[in-house]
Amino acid sequence: MVETKKTPTANDYSVIVAPVITEKANNNTAHRQYTFRVLKTATKPVIKSAIEALFGVTVTNVNTHNRQGKTKRFKGRVGFRSDAKFAIVTLAEGNSIDMQTGV
Image 1 (tube, rainbow, N blue to C red):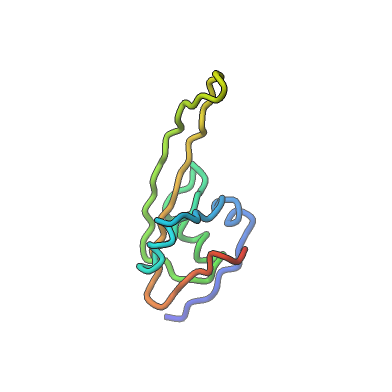
Image 2: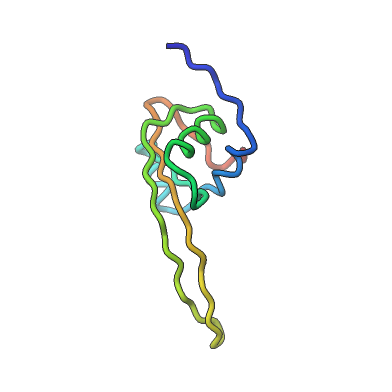
């Protein structure tokens, strides 16, 4: 089977909001797992196709996690952190993503 590289579309750029650069996320790169913040409405197949188009890699698995926003106080005023959705993407053997460079 010959794979053709998919050209990224504007929708692919809007699905992936930002990479997650934390110590825990960086430790998972040893297992070929990369964490991204994604749109709340994005589904696993959409996330998979966006990552494959943007980075030119083969994705084997996508796990998603929804984080509910918290009520926080700052100088006596009540605020609210927004909800967020994260995707942990597992790549095929031999693939990697350089998280330090932009897309």
